[in-house]
Amino acid sequence: MLLHFLAMTTPQGEGGAQGGGGIMTFLPWIAIILIFYFLLIRPQAKRQKQHQQMLRQLRKGDKIVTSGGVHGVIVGIKENSNVLTVKIADKVRVEVERSSITRVILGDSEDDAKKSDLS
Image (tube, rainbow, N blue to C red):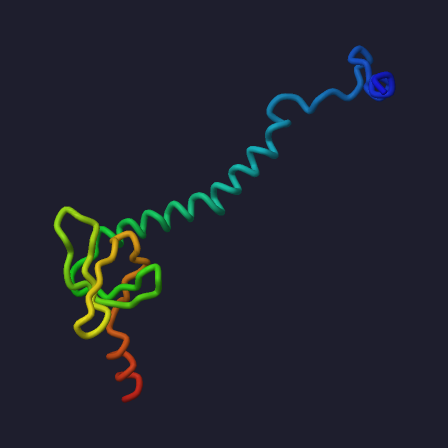
């Protein structure tokens, strides 16, 4: 079997086709890495940065949605902590981690619905 493998290889002294040489061998890998960077890594890092900025700007009265899908209004923020008090219904308040907030709802959806009904 070893003899069969040796017979398939070309001797180096014959000047046959050698390796592509240097950087040309790595050029496809470099292109793949660049494509992954611009299509996957960079956009994800940008979204993560925007999400962190949104979490830092949370204030009382903001309407939010948690990662569990719970809608509510921030009624309290504990000092030196990442815990928010969120009102989810009349006389129902829960404490959630700041990191569990997925988005802030802009505008009042009920008022927008009433305005669209009047139009």
